[in-house]
Image (cartoon, rainbow, N blue to C red; front, side, top):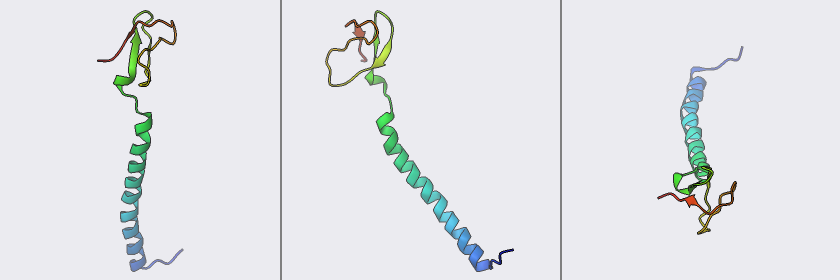
Length: 78
């Protein structure tokens, strides 16, 4: 059995008390910045009037064709 004194156990306990929330905070901050790239919002979705397909819009284009039926009749978000 490993002999641990009360002072060493207290030091380990205090280190864990500060280490676990610190690591959690760092992961939350890094994760929130990473998820902003992949988050899909409703203002980037369009629906085709002919075939009712919903697809992502690119903001660079002013006119979008449906990827399935190739029509220009697309409902843009308001």
